[in-house]
Amino acid sequence: MRVLAQNEQKVKLDVINQKLLYLLAQNARYSYSTLAKQVKLSREAVKQRMQRLQEKQVILGFQTLIDPQKLGLASFHLFMQLNNPQQAEEISTKLTADGDINALIQYQGRFDFEVAYLLKDLPSLNQKITELKDIRNYELCFLLKTIISKTYPQCMYDFKIPGFKVSKDGSFQSHFSKAKGEKIKLDQHDLKLLQLLCQDARMSTVNLASKLKLSVDTVIYRIKKLISAQIIQEFRPTINYAALGYSVYALFFRFKNLTKEKEAKFKQYIQQHRNFLWSVQCLGPFNNISYIIVKDTFDFHKVVNQFREEFHDVLDSYESLLSFAEYKYTYFPERILNKK
Image 1 (spheres, rainbow, N blue to C red):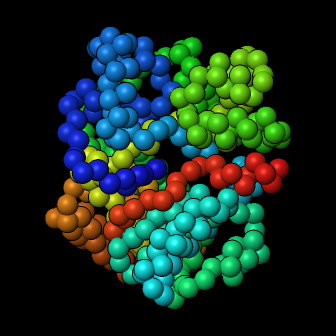
Image 2 (cartoon, rainbow, N blue to C red):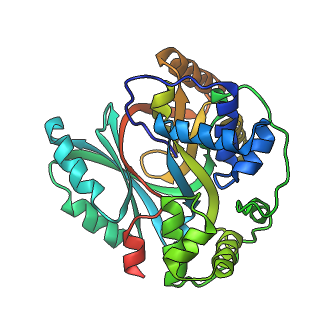
Image 3 (cartoon, rainbow, N blue to C red):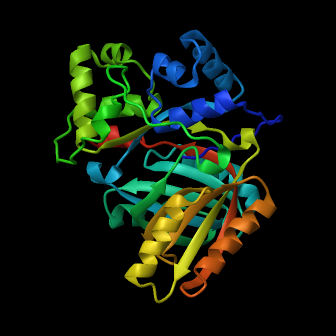
């Protein structure tokens, strides 16, 4: 979803590169030919631009967004405060190695870390919390329903690209609109395929077939099956927002007297907002956790104050944290494969 890797020099994108990021955010498996057609360049020119974006650490990779609930897993986010901030490096090393953790982000604010676990049940979570040491305080949120999940929000560009159709370019784009969400039973090949796609969403079906020791047709069939079951939800780039001069803040909202009408208005507001990256309903001390992307503190205060004005009658309280380091972010923690 978001990456904050430190860069000494900020990268300024021209319109063509902005459009490439926009298109990749729609589907990171779009072929060079498909991308070239949309930005009106040659296939080789597009390939070179993407390579330069990776060399400059604007794009850090390509991941596959999956639905953990379809794998029988629940998402728990633990926000914790350390006894001693000097222990941050030691604790981050230990948590990064935990195969049940899919995200580890360091913050400036009331909490030092956000730890995202993908686990089957509450006893498993309790065991994880029991094992944590040197923690002064923590808040726990159980994620319920995602409102938005973006990679390249509108505040980062100022153009429109008309919709277009593609077929047989390896992106599987047409299959997402046909997905029905049927239940399917996954075998080890499916799980290994998911793992490979989460590591590199642009990996060709030929390379996938080679690594899985399956035919290309079988790999294509399995990807289509995983999309149809809505296990695979999106192919997306891993964008380094810090390299482009942006900061990411986490916002925690608690509401009061939230009617269905106000809740619908809130969801629509978030979905249409230029700065919101991710927003999810949750159980815990907060009703909602959202991530916004901004250029500076003035931009941050403008976004927050507009939100407070819009929902002053139902917003009970809110908090914010500044994200400044991301140690881990994966949609497929390694333990998933080992547990099956």
